Every structure is written in structure tokens, then in C-alpha cells.
Length: 89
Image (cartoon, rainbow, N blue to C red; front, side, top):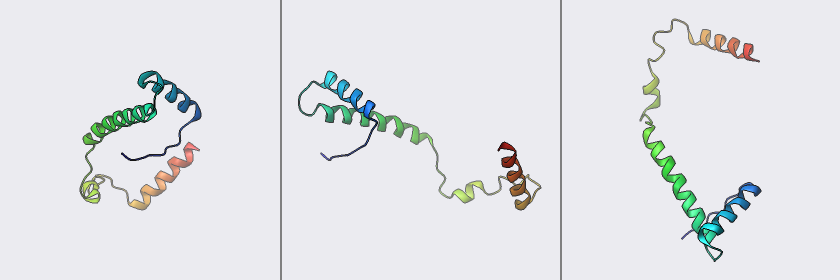
């Protein structure tokens, strides 16, 4: 068993402590059980989501050729992007 120190909002901490005591009782270790349960659920939820994300082995190779159809140079695209950003401000 390992320790993990985290910093959370004061109101969230109060709510967590109250809920942990109601679910796991007022004895020793109830906060640890509740925290472990919460972290386990969070990890399971995010691990399943991350399995859906496909990270290419070579990211440069993955994007190479995607702008083949664009007939502007890189410098022209940079200037156009700058003008678009300037309009948003």
C-alpha cells in the first residue's frame, strides 16, 4: 500500500469526508477506502476512453501530405492565419 497526497478544494474535501463516513462508516480507513474507490473508478473510465485514441507511431508521417491540395505556400498560410486571428481580437 502506498500513500498519495493530493490537494483539492476545501468544499469538495468536506463533501468527500461526509460521504466517505456515511458509506464506509466512521472507523479508521474509511477515507482511504473511499479515495481508492473513487480513483479506481476514474482510472477505469479514462483507460477505456484512452484505448479508443489511436496515437500514430510516427506523427510526422501521419500528417505528411494532408495539405497536398492547398495551393498556397507555407508563408502565405501563416499570413492568412495571422489575419484571421487579428479579426477575432
